[in-house]
Length: 378
Image (cartoon, rainbow, N blue to C red; front, side):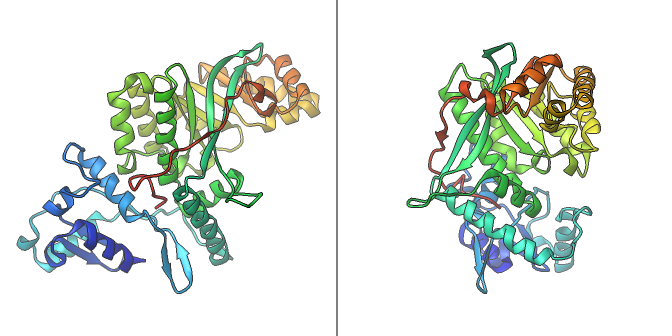
């Protein structure tokens, strides 16, 4: 993996391997900014440093890497540091610089029994997803958040990414399959970035639409993966004002501070913030307090329990009261049947989401074919 990444660096971003590139162990490279890098197709002069580094990540991770019969995607990290010119640094200074440039290890990632088999199975799914994205088979279904008393009134429509089957095939990858795989592999950032860019493009083509996009908690941090998205939202406040960013999987919040900073940045640009699957995990309350969401979406299990018992109905009403103190809008997800809607109405819900409300959905929109800037799952 490391040799292939090094070759890609040399081929596209280095004028002289000896002068522009240094490496430590096999998993960390130091690339000095040079004329060749600045003239690369994906590093236009008008781009910010963050956008240029985002382009670097996209180019390096644009294709899976094959070795010894196994195909995998690399998880990449990049940062910008100020150092002396390479000809002014000795070997020891380079080594020290490389050590300080490395990201801190994720102490929450602990190998478990059978991790090799799970890794291979997850990576097989991730590679299949990468191939589907290259083939332009990404599409969206739009799940509306509607007023329980007037279904024609929508708060926004959430984009649900789906993958179309290959020609001649009846089945394809379901989000319930590939999204958990990306999460376990730590490969959510590039996929979430791609989905956000597509949703922003949909906002451009639908001037009156209000759309939402769901991100994994591990993607919700300010880093160079988001350079172009943040620049777009800053320059186009009319798009940001119609975008709701949902943060899902709050159980995986290894640290609240990066998520808090991410939400604060998006809110400052005009986006609305939603916490998804609230009540499903122990970290939900802390996440809501950190992110200060505009919208809280209750986990679908609350509707199912309320449907089944009086105690479940009391739980739903209590959660609605709690969430009403934490956010301006409270949404009950999981309204799958007619009686689910009745249960929600009895509990005093105003906003609902679920397959029973699909009558107000717009048609699924195939994503545009991916260009070299977007072809990344690294």
